[in-house]
Length: 458
Image (cartoon, rainbow, N blue to C red):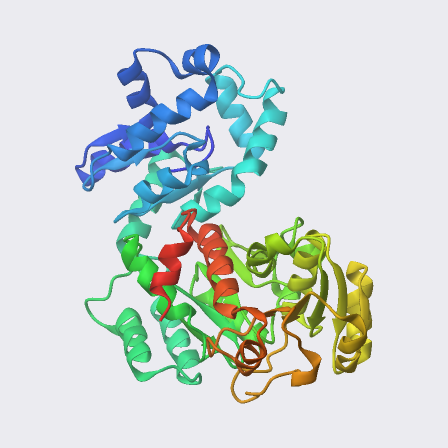
């Protein structure tokens, strides 16, 4: 059990443990037992950092199976805790509205964690931790208007039966029959949805696009699921209409989607929330997290562009393209204080995107006048069937760095061309690695090392 204070983790956990004939562990109580001090005392005398270190040790030493665990409200902010808790386990997020939590905490007062009045502290911490709660959990149960016994029964029933009805599974299979999914992958879906011995707790995820059969994401994510012992399966959601994909995703209680061409902008009207920090400013979404009835959009593309280019801060850059991928790239390049010019076959589209980020704009023919230090390709050119370079040889020179965001194939026509001329090159694989790491963190709260992702890419 994870969730904020006052959502009922301890009480519900105890009832569940009794009904399932399993031992019950409250990690806060275990910390107090091991240290011989109350949690408020630890916070007061040694600070939160010391408390989190003790909590980390307690989480790492929990039994591996056959136990019901109630965790502290802030346990999910540490990726190492989430990695330990998620392994071969199901995490249930308990939520409640702020009025209910306030009333419950007033009956069991504890020293404040922030110095704010109780209601303000609840609102502040819940907002700060919400992304972590959503990432860490497999299922969500609202305890606002229910008894402990009823809530415990809902959790047990979810863990026994999952969340999908026969009708939902039939609808899902009908959708996947229309996509270009490889036969072995389709067989896996059939087993998940129709086999007598199916595991009702296996949840679905996928990449959404049209086309998207070229995506390496299913192979990577399914390998990561095995590595971190997560009960999930990742597949292709291929359809010409994003509203149909989102309808099916909600119906199948999907945990998350990676959004690719051409839906990074079109998906936004179908979301309940868009991350205000990055995705809203970029105007494009490549990651959707479904949690507690909401679909929340994020953008990790820009981080995949930014991280390989940190050493070029302040450079003169040309960005090719003006779509959703280019928007994320423009955000990253301007964040690195680069002087950016956006070039596109349709100049009007370049002008619109340039106005959004304060960049220059023009056509592909203008690259010779700019003499950039960096060229970033954010068009699909180089990916089948448009397998040619967006630039000619005379538009490149060996002093340039060329970054092609297309990652399939790993060595695109532009990368081959740039290497022949002597340019420094960065392949789309580097972007894929960094944005996938960020996606995995948003989906599951686990921080995967970049080298581990690199080794897993097929």
